[in-house]
Length: 298
Ligand SMILES: Nc1nc2c(ncn2[C@@H]2O[C@H](COP(=O)(O)OP(=O)(O)OP(=O)(O)O)[C@@H](O)[C@H]2O)c(=O)[nH]1
Ligand SMILES: [Mg+2]
Ligand SMILES: [Zn+2]
Image 1: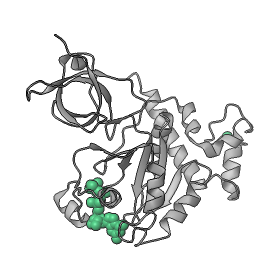
Image 2 (image 1 turned 90 degrees about the vertical axis):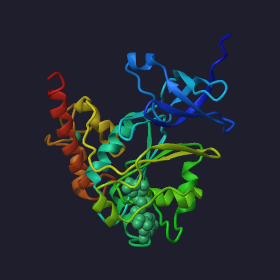
Image 3 (image 1 turned 45 degrees about the vertical axis):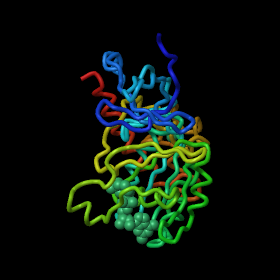
């Protein structure tokens, strides 16, 4: 007699074993059926799934992966609604990398929050970023896991969301999560990480706390994979360009180096909601996307 499949959330995975969490908090270990491999589908942390729990202490089976609202390749996680990009004063944030991630996120309808951590070391980072990302729809919030500054407002953004914490190794992601949710994730000194050449956080696991779902991820050092996309779509990921859409001299205008570009004029004036540095980084990203687009059939 076949049992009815049950619904749960895939919260972690090691090799071909996955942990599924039911809404009542029960956890099951399941294995993915071969059909997933044949379909080229890899179960991801964050997936909503149908599964059969194993009988008598046996492992169960993953039966079905339900449609995903979003997919992140790196970190590999599904159904994220809010991407928490954690940056800190030292080392200085790599904003080109942040902007690339924002483009990818926005294309999937994922909201982005720039979390300026370690505000106890430098309280000016959050205001600087707020200025830099004005008009971009990016939330910017300053926090300190040492003084507790900004933790309440960060938490209030997280209600009802599935949040993924990402950012450079040593930015303070795990420390922040521990402080917010009373967990005990491994954290580490930056010097120690450099010596070992390793991130403290290695494996992604989704946690649930009330109506908040969140996951910590290992810091990235190499995140260069650029999704293949039409170059003319990159600008759509920049809400601060939107007020100027259709007003440039040439149509369509990619706001690159075209003469009479209103976005560039706005950025150069320094008085509008378009940061010149962000426009410059946009051009760099546009260039990368163009190259990838040209080589897409190679
Ligand atoms: N002063 C100060 N130090 C902090 C703060 N948050 C974290 N740190 C320190 O920063 C270092 C790195 O913190 P982690 O939480 O391990 O960083 P991570 O982003 O999880 O790093 P990976 O797991 O390697 O990606 C540790 O030594 C922490 O004690 C903060 O708010 N203020
Ligand atoms: Mg960590
Ligand atoms: Zn333009």
